[in-house]
Image (tube, rainbow, N blue to C red):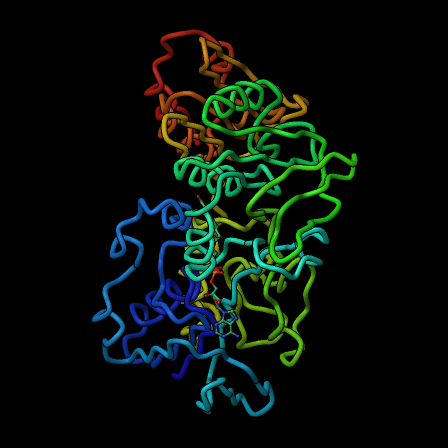
Length: 408
Ligand SMILES: Cc1cc2nc3c(=O)[nH]c(=O)nc-3n(C[C@H](O)[C@H](O)[C@H](O)COP(=O)(O)OP(=O)(O)OC[C@H]3O[C@@H](n4cnc5c(N)ncnc54)[C@H](O)[C@@H]3O)c2cc1C
């Protein structure tokens, strides 16, 4: 069986591994648009700050890609596919016929108008190793950065820039820092901690345009205020890279629509990772892209559809890797406070645990330490029944081992 995979991010790579493990006789051709072998994308902020050892960034050593049954086409984009003849063509001239195809093309950064319309140097997205190197080069000789977006990735990038000595002005359209992973309380605490680390926050603020004669000099906000700066980094979300859906005639929505087996609307064509939209509509995370890739790889090699195994969604988990500040959010943290919850506060630390109305563990956020994070994560993934434990969780000295004993 010949399998072609477009995209060698964690989804494509995990699928290749799973397919070869499930059916060692299958032949996998892995196309990678990027010129570097697969690397840990979440470590890019440390590449910007210069803290990531160059070898530690890569998922596997070079030799790994020379195993029998795997053909790795580095630096070659899968350009054309013909779903009728099952033929594919790569940008470096490869032509091949496949039995099954996996689209694992990831996502591309969303660039707001203020960033997209400015064509001179000084504006940077951060998605690839190439982006990270370019950003680092400019940051080395810069003093002030404007950062669009205060999501997890933006804050980690902002922190990398502060480590290089820059002052970072963060523009956040919403009313609080890290809006998707915090509650109003944990966000206010987090903002205070970050302000002590050379971050300047502009909440409810949006960039109108960038200005500069030969390169970026200033970002003007919709309010009319201006911020003089040397670079603008953009972390305003991503869009699924779903171009191949057009020639393949696949249904798309926010990504390529797949079923519980990671198969698209065209039989024999699978999709996984940031480019895919699973029935639970979650994505944009390393662990999820990996789990989807593994499921797609296992299923794509099954000649008997009855042997396929459904993808089991993993609860989204977010960990802020800004030195000295621990923030973990897993599952539904219900920022609006509509579901049953308990809170525990102590100095700069904060914990909120949320259950469904029926008492099933739904999510939690812990700021300031990692106490109970492993047990709480297991309880959320197991959808444990809380059985009246919420109140005890609001007190100090809670024994988190009690969570492991809860029925799932
Ligand atoms: C800076 C940064 C920090 C992050 N931090 C975290 C974090 O802390 N925790 C977390 O859970 N997630 C994090 N993420 C998100 C996580 O990295 C992604 O969700 C994950 O990498 C998605 O994997 P993927 O394989 O679906 O896509 P990608 O990693 O985007 O890989 C897709 C690959 O396919 C290539 N490609 C596209 N089209 C083609 C084609 N036609 N032919 C060949 N190749 C093609 C692309 O160039 C790319 O190399 C972060 C992301 C970034 C950018």
